[in-house]
Image (tube, rainbow, N blue to C red; front, side, top):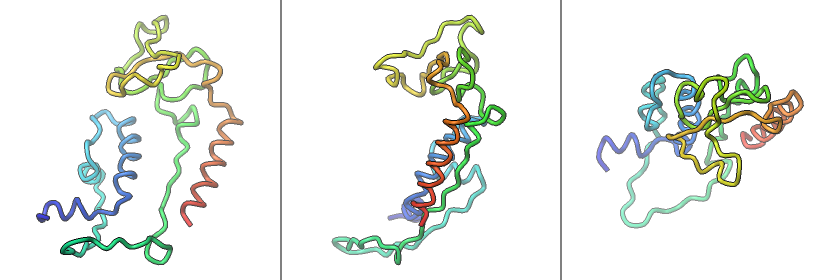
Length: 166
């Protein structure tokens, strides 16, 4: 492996997942296009990646069983901002029936303003629209984030994150 690959290839294996989560939140709130890779995202955020030395093995690699003794717990940070009207990114969460929501990256504004027609399918094909194409839809009662639903989501995510982080 060359020196450039060493840095990219030996970064903590969970970093791509963390970068993907950050990419979604950064891409949703930033006016610039989202980063395309974990290294460029880390550079954009000014984060120094932890690089772990990987011994080079000739022949077959010996796989080690992961245990609590030879691994570190996940460090999770939960952000429930999208579940509150005051902090949610516009058009990403339904708080009012009939309001617009967007899926993917359909453009900056709903089609045709307040009287426009939704472009997201509401049937068995509703997730078939590619993210880069995106679509606009209207919130129904079933889509709404209610105080009770928000409480359940926060509780379940917090309990699971605590279990996974041990």
